[in-house]
Length: 171
Image (tube, rainbow, N blue to C red):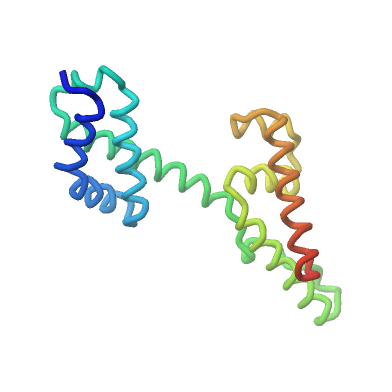
């Protein structure tokens, strides 16, 4: 039985370029393809001493990459579903004068940019709480995290927005 380190080294040497190319074709981006290849290697490394018992290492590696690509695509889809888009925000009250409306839309656009700078989980928790009005417990259950983590995400988002406001005097 080969030691896990030597098995991974050999697999990397023999298949890395093809594996990255394969993963890139699956997800459409070379950097993401590299990340998926890394996940496939980590999958084998996670098997520990059982990795030496893999009968067809190349097949296993490429299957692990395909599975990692499926997981990656699903995560990405969820992340994008929670991204904020200025076009999806309802129009600001039409009763205001045009200059006020313009300034409010600019502030809203800066807030959207600030939210999109946050990590996906942080942004999701903030949007679920502040925009959709969900409670911390409900958010924790839907995201599979603790209530304490939800609170930390929301506080981080608020702190980020406050810091940006201080920097440029916006929103």
